[in-house]
Length: 399
Image (cartoon, rainbow, N blue to C red):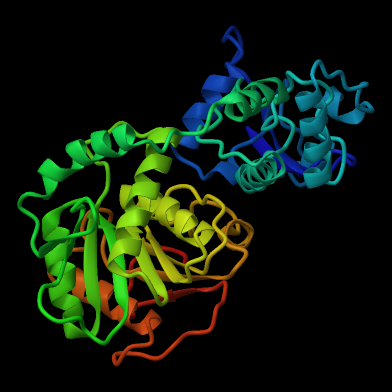
């Protein structure tokens, strides 16, 4: 096989794999081959098209002559007239052309990835669709389903879905599912519904940080490492308690926003969450901002997808985490800039997924938080796009 880059305006640049097949062997299934390669390669290195050839041409020196490789015929023909069946499909076609800078697909059933839309471009397209239609797309796209037709069905479904009811019955149901998990959590029971655990005694003068954890020990260990400089309040994610959907996630975020506002009715707020807790605290932050509250900083730790968020964000990733985007996707800062228009910072902290509250790692996490809250262990950092390490370490990742 030989893989080469192809620039064929007006289409987007893409990788083409030319494959020599053994005599008598069946041609490989492109979808299965792409899925297998995706297990070994980052998305931007997976070819978008596979073209069988009888042999790989070579030049006079015996080296592969990539310039002599044939170009897939569908890439050399002008795009066909694009047919759309609904107003949503037509609007999506226009958005795709706007994002790609040129007509990318000829029909509503053409694969966007096969047409050259890589992970970064797909993420930017999803953000543009969410902004244009005022919705949140909560599903990924697999090979064969990344088409305008499927996108239009998802968009129409989200637009037609009724808003999540904010009724006492919904709140009571969520409370009933979350409260049993808080029985062993440290701290004083706070909030209108008692869903927050916080420090007892007199109010501390420092900032108030509301963090959505997975478990009580995480709250205890981070609180101990932060010390007296921060008033740490713990909320719980829906882990093992509820089934996440756009509706339950939004309802839980509204419920937590009310809890936070009851505890801290005035002043700037600092929010944070790890893993699933990051999804929940984002929803709470959106609701608090809708209520006119100042959310000074939201710390989103170990997130796998970067939803649009209009507040300042600090993104934390583990040096050894499979969710660390550096080395996994091309130019993640471009995704971050689109998702966090109010500004973002990135820190790479010691540890791997699930290890950040263990001894040693939790102290590094606490030091990072304190630095970004402009507290004694460090001063404020300017908003930037470059990742910064909490401490020097050789983790073998291209950060």
